[in-house]
Image (cartoon, rainbow, N blue to C red; front, side, top):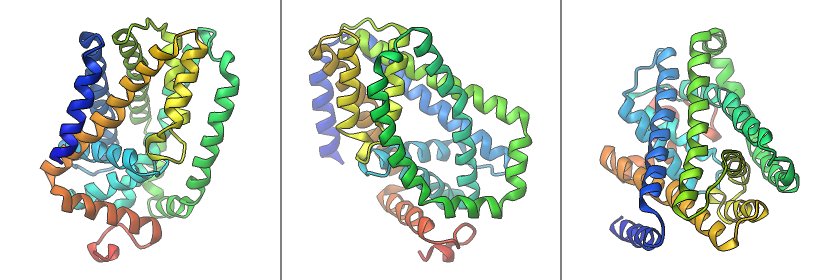
Length: 306
């Protein structure tokens, strides 16, 4: 772990030596704030379901899930299982109930994504990248193929928690609150790109930053850890297409990846280590893996075979 931290520090200091640290620091703060908002949204949904997990453990689960997604080609699904497993370890929160909350959480993302797309369309930048978006949608289809493999898990969750599912759908206060938080998270994503741009000498227009946010969402579905390679190439192509130099574009993408992949992963590793240790981290991974293979997960330790 010390070697990882040393490597991150070296990369980080090397990057910031040539950029505007004031703006880059703002981008980092925006990202961390968005993770707290993300954790609060999930914590609030779980609370409405009658599960009173501590906010601290919910936040650690969120950051641990980001770590899992960043180090494994899980198409962003591995982190979701880890989140549910971590709360089961810490609070015996039923696995299926956590998954239900995550599925509902994903539904409330729709208004936020719609707002970002609307900003890009209003700025007249989305239509110029139909080819890139189409290519990115191919990764989305790959993601849907993986998601298709988990339909049995989702169907079982709905069957077990039919009453809870209906309650979530009918809870207008929860839907409005969670959707509002989702919109704020996506707006924070736009401003994160905007301030990273300022840090490297690119003055992005908000619609351009929104387009990068959309691009990150789509290219991040590629079958590599955190969309490695695809995100870098996709975002760089978008920036060059917008008229920015490839050097500046590459620097902006590097700055973004240092935050969302490197810094976020190290933060997740540190929080997980402090909260439960590497053994607990490995146990959560084992539980989440078994849950995807078994239909008998959720309420007892024996059901996981651990």
